[in-house]
Length: 68
Image 1: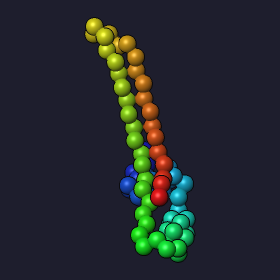
Image 2: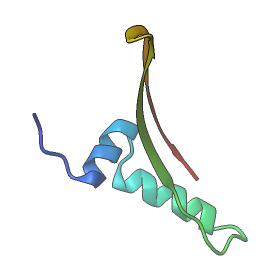
Image 3: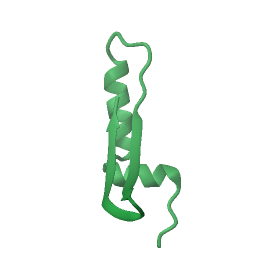
Image 4: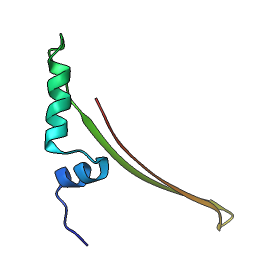
């Protein structure tokens, strides 16, 4: 398995590049905005429901994205 840095982990999954990030932040700051940031999200959740010691249901979800 590839050993990713946190930065590469998010850039690869969001299809973002350094130049794309720079362009987005430059566009935002080019207006009347004095501050801007991007946030990256990657969330993994797993749920197992037991009833009387038996597995009733199992579910999982992966959410990822980039926002400004």
